[in-house]
Length: 359
Image (cartoon, rainbow, N blue to C red):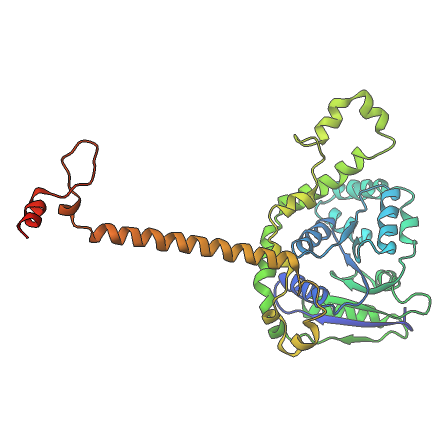
């Protein structure tokens, strides 16, 4: 990992949303080159990040450690085949530790044992599987030790290829821990990467708005649906579901199809979020990135804007029409329209008829 990869870190002194802001900007602006492997420490964070990226039409997948080895192998094969270029993986050692820390005493020991036993025996094969052509490893959350950093960084720059490892740290203490951790690895040079916050402020509103849409309940539903899909497609459970159709029906929605968190999320995604207007780009990058940034020439976004403008024009036209009719009604002389005839036919008043005859 020393010879072929460059190692950098970004120090973020803001809130947690800054990690999502920097990740979105680097992915959308094409700063992270090639296939991207993102490492997080908890399963909830993995699904939260995926649902966040989905809102911007950035396709990704989660390497879910809660699923059997065959499912994870299939996910990695799809990643290697190029069906999607962003894979979010959970550092299972850190995940187990953080999960156990929520308990205490004897309950903590039982939870650690249960978590270890819950990992199937084939999971080590997935850890050792080769991720092909990974251009960038993004440490979205900090590593626990030097060996974990080596494990993550070793997924890129293989077989003489080049690659990059980028770590996001949110405090000075995390920066010191990372420097001390990497310092124990001989021959590795860790360089700071300066990111001008002012260049990314234009994206902050849409990033924070997208994060508000990814609620804990949506993350929980996404994890649950992932397991439900695995159960519904399991070859081993086909016989069981054939004998117990009511259990299979319980997994499905009322429409007869298994609920999919991607489809559920699409109902709340705004098409314009997949489009990056030129005025949001950093000024120094507008001329060079305008033609290559994904979403700059988004047909769906253009159609959405045209429909929106047409709808606003129709509403404004109706408003102007109703105001003109109201104005005409106010200017109408009641003596000209008053009538005593049943049926409400408009008729000139007698005074007006006499005036007309006198003329």
